Image (cartoon, rainbow, N blue to C red):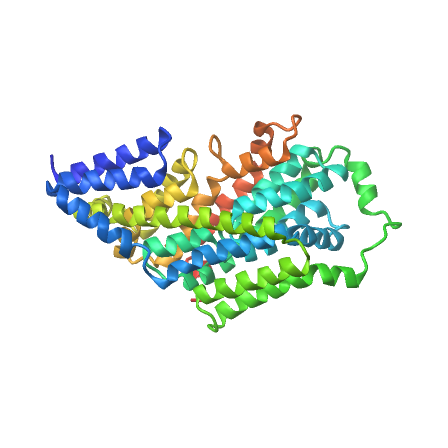
Length: 442
């Protein structure tokens, strides 16, 4: 059996192991180790490469971005910043058609700019937005679907953990990836808003229990507005954090690692000022930060080991040659690659897809002249869609479990996210066809 055949066989084994329930990190380590052993017929080499990868895989100062941004996101989550952002958005958009749905998207967009984790957004806004939307006459399933659909913005709008992981795997600038995600992230948020307004006008029964009473409530002139001072007080913390982190990053004043450190310190000050952080909660936040960060770093070490096995097998070059011979141009390759990612999104989680596919596909894309920042945004959007597609749909399950409402089934939430998936597919096509959407600021 040739080394290429062994390489392809091992990729199949890797996917099978993950589908059978093995942790992705262990699957990557095991497959890579066995692959190097079989290809080189040298178990000592496999052990030496594992030893080298365990150190060099995460020795760079850049990897400190991961625990710092995770810590910032967790501190922001416990400070009720998400709730305050939603309340202000609700106040400002109260008279708009599907105002609370749009407010959820707007709050998620702002919240994503300081957390970078979709699951955190889904959990926070399920508690905040769904009860409020239901109280105002929205169907509970639609409210839950809106939270699940808009939560994916956390994976694209910087600082995003998926963009950090892609930047590490593809060896491109993480700061550059953050900048590349701005326009597509805003396109996605704008598309969600347009879709929500359009679907409420055209199919009000899909959104509201009683469209007429909802319209009267929306136009109620006796409503007491929130005082301006209170509104400003609720928005100041998150605006300052966004300006501090993203402003410093985009102006070049901070490196991504420094931005994470400054952001984490700023989030700590917000949590302390709001008295939402006692000793018990601080310990829980630190413990969660450690668990999440170590999990991600272990995955990155495993992915680096897996990438070395692929290189030894000559797989990226071989697949690149096959793609070139098949007549696929760069555009054809991007659409073919996106289709594979979408299919994988139905059975695997986002991180697993990145760890399996990016080491194979990024060298091919680079060889075809595709900008790796553009390629990364296409990858992340396609991966994001997997957060909403059955049977995996982790954002949908997060919302369902957090909501814990027997009257709202998982199937109903999946159905309510279909319009969001349609918007994401449209944005994916536009970003694929127009690379400048991702590279305009680079």
